[in-house]
Image (cartoon, rainbow, N blue to C red):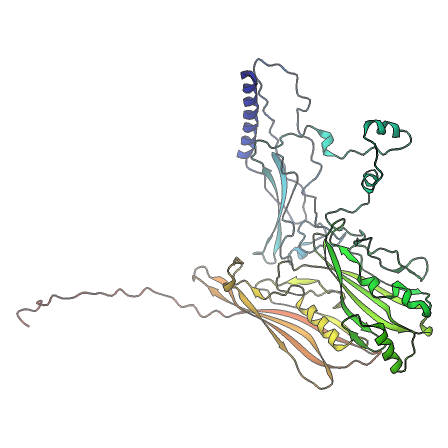
Length: 553
């Protein structure tokens, strides 16, 4: 490179440095907007400097002028909005959320939304929560972020790069041309997929509403009646689509053990992909198995011959045992569209000729995991007041806010007391019940000895021939004022979770009972009366000389 070329390169670098320095010195545009406003703040574009050597004469650049309008409006983009026309928990950019919804959020799951970070200047939408307000409010800012790097992209002059190019699909007219311009076609799965137009293919980063739940080999099958009451086993389960259906099957009692849709393994063996087209699999966990004929709860997949022998001894002559009568899926997902847990509950029974055609019941519902950080949570009251329908819907405990909520639970004789007790206990505690809480709002996780343990106490009342069921969870948080009298800080000193159980008579078969389940949290100020403190009086250590009173003494 000669001296002329080196001088030209230095001028170009100085041009980029001057443009970036001018943008970095400017004050970013910050807009405080209303909760429901998404209009971007006005900005002023600074023209780019284009110095050139005086002896060089060139034509105007073809891309001179303002840069193209951004394809993505960060103020209107919301990647955590999974449910249409519904407010997603902790999704601060969800347009379906109101100020009441924002007041119960614990944090913003997506705090910053921005485009390509390689640009010299771009807009960024920042979401946060103001917990000092009463009630807490959402804060939305639209700021102009500056990239100080001299190698940042100042102007997007290649407009085709702003959109995807539609691939040319081979057909009878262009096949010969594509064969000449390429190295040929290979008949494998990858090449076939590259020329297949799949506009409805799900995003590989997350599940979205209505997308089929993928498994390791296909998709999660959810039997449903289609054109008739008969079960169709090729119906896929869709993400965030709660369903409860009944359908019938025409079966032969002599061959019922060979029908895979009547076995437990058919519903428990699939492994759901955590996100579409990923390698991470979520196994289906069998939470409970109930055998209806014997009213017996099974904790493992017991042998079929043992159950058949028990039926013969008790005088029941059904031919088919271990037949699946009811299936209930419970899938837990995050606000990022990931399936993190899959639970399965089964109701088994013995089928006789009087029950043919067989009727089966299938349910699937989705629970959003809102306790990613192990917070204290309580039940959130809903209009239906159904504990099973509201399972997983929790409200975070906010410091200083005493709350109480509850729901109703219907009990039948088909479910054992022990199974109901376990279900209600997990319902009251919620997901990720913490063992410790932070004494201050800014306590560090590595200061383990400073954290306050949660004391879990169980209260029961023993009554003969009765069912002990948890009915309430009462959380008491004791705090005190700590520090200077001029600026005291709240400090948690004790947390107690009291699980209260009551005795209920066993429910007979065919009868139902409704019990009330409640959770509550109270905050108790245990601060001691403030006492004004003064410095100790100074001690005067003065000694007289030994001959001070001479000659009198």
